[in-house]
Length: 311
Ligand code: 9Z3
Image (cartoon, rainbow, N blue to C red):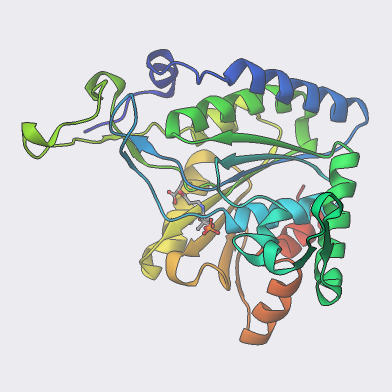
């Protein structure tokens, strides 16, 4: 099935219920940082869902945990950017990602003395927790980071367009780093049942439609002066660079970061209009980088592109 246009997508899909609140937050954040002449990076992170019912019990999802996006957001903050962290609800977030699952509780001790109960950080965990906690506190005290969350692909697009509307006035001081794994397919609104699908009606036949390519209006209309970095994910190596280059030729943005599902944490290819640069980390480098920043290593090369005047 073909895709509808992006205008049609927004005409048919209503904004999410918390949309106006998020739009106000985005506007305040961008206005404040614009006033100070700051740079803002919009980092998208995590996967989008495709609901199978309006009252959603079931949905199509993808693998992304938000590792790349959450790690990269920390690195952008460290490089002096204010960061809009637009992420899948309940995916990894900057700073707290270091202590997900049981990790945080394993770092704590409890002395139970009734009303005088105290909780302390284990001495050997202070060195691990303190640097992350101080970077978290500093970023939040400076008002340098704004979190906005999406779940479905339609919520993602509404937020993306609203963020772009606010970022447009920053011109080249806006950078978009589109690391979220956005579904290429969805079910048009009029074919999504209201209530939970019943097994008594037999196995459903679900027909997906192509999602309109939002990168086209984003680059040419929404934020024409921004530095836009998109991501290309493949599972077949032979398609990776050709498809990244095709995206760059088509949308005319600044860079595609190409990665394979299987090797995404230690290998990326940075594709710009003039260059193709592969970055592969050795086992030792992966270990060293993971201890400090996890997989945000590609930002070192975005920074070197920046120093060459590319943005
Ligand atoms: C990526 O390629 C990201 O690097 C990953 C990060 C999603 C692989 P994790 O969250 O994974 O760290 O586990 N993001 C973009 C993927 C994408 O959907 N791209 C589309 C495409 O390849 C649209 S540009 O066609």
